[in-house]
Length: 187
Picture 1: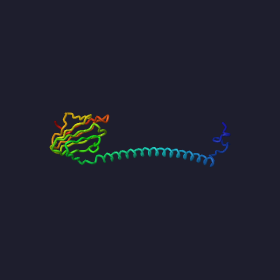
Picture 2 (picture 1 turned 135 degrees about the vertical axis):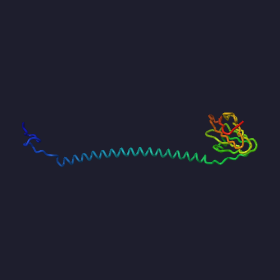
Picture 3 (picture 1 turned 60 degrees about the horizontal axis):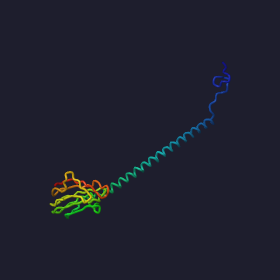
Picture 4 (picture 1 turned 135 degrees about the horizontal axis):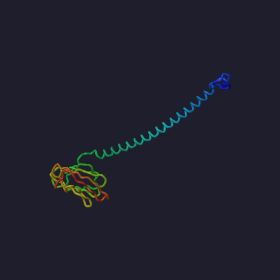
C-alpha cells in the first residue's frame, strides 16, 4: 500500500494546511451577513406584531370610549329621581310629553279620582311609575289605538301609598302602543 500523494496519511505528500486568514475572514463575514439578515427578519416580524397589537389596542380603546359615552348619556337621562308631583285629576302621556315622564315616579296628590291615559304614539323605550299619594285612586288606561295589558285585569291603584308601573311593551307601527301594567293595583 502506497502513501504517496495522500496528504493525510503519506509522509511524502504535501503538507496539511488549515484555512487561510482570508478564508476565515470571508467565512466570518458570510456568517455576519446571515446573522444580520436573520436579525432584520426578526425585527420586521416584531414590528408587524407590534403594529397589529397597536391596532387591536386602538380598537379596544375606541370601543371602551363608546361604552363610556353611552353610560354617561344614560346616566344623564336617569340621574333625576325627583318625583314629578301632579295635583290634577286627568293626565295623558303621549309622544309629545313622554320624555318628561319617561323613567320617572309620578306622585298624584289629588284627593279626587284621577284618570291617567297613555297615548298610542309613544315608541322606543318608555316606562314610568304612577303613585297614589292621596286618597284619589288612579285609573290607568290606554287611548284609542293603544292597549293596556294587566294580567289580572286590574287597572286602578289600590290605596294611598300604592305604586304602579307602566312599561311600553311594543309599538310596531308607531300608532298602536301596547303597555304592560303591574304593581299595587286593584279592582
